[in-house]
Image 1 (tube, rainbow, N blue to C red):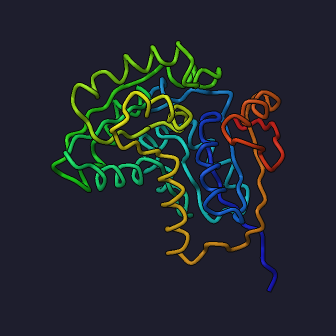
Image 2: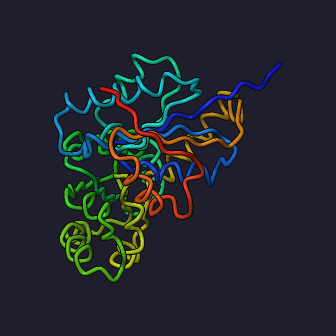
Image 3: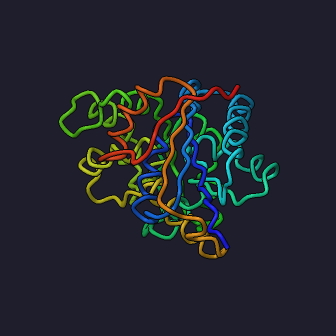
Length: 269
């Protein structure tokens, strides 16, 4: 029987979800990946719940044109707001970033104080508070909205010697340091690029990347479902809703070396 090509569909509001793709490639190099970045509507983190849900369903509708074995919501905001709706409307397995990062944080904390940095929409949804409570009911969760971080990261302001990102992060992290958190969740897929800066400011804190946690949970899920490696040949394709050239140039920062596949512009509205 022919080994029909099947894909893991991954989507985000822009390019931050590429940190999830990078983790998937490192964990499962042979899996086929279709990535959709809704760059025409980035960012999702400042939008209403209704608008975010509409965009997410458009994203999934596009990806579902392909033979998908699973969907990965590689955006904390989209996951927090619309994952249940996606699961309700689509039959394939749906994986997110909030649950695996929450489980990891709940299991990791020693003093029961967990910090979360994320977008306004993710913080306001209290998704991390709810998920962490499922795994550690005694944990104290302190969430801080960080609306400036996504645009700064996308403009290359994420290095340790950058005074701008250092100044902004110092202000955002101050209440978490004062609260004595021993675990910090990077609750946005852009934030792994800030790992070095954050760890230098909070050297004794265990930092959890939602992107890494998502890739680990995806692999475990595919294995449990018996579809790990099914139809896999390591193919990668990238689609964006606006400016493929800019995406391709900026994406190299997130992927670390090369995309390993083509980038195409598509209209999905």
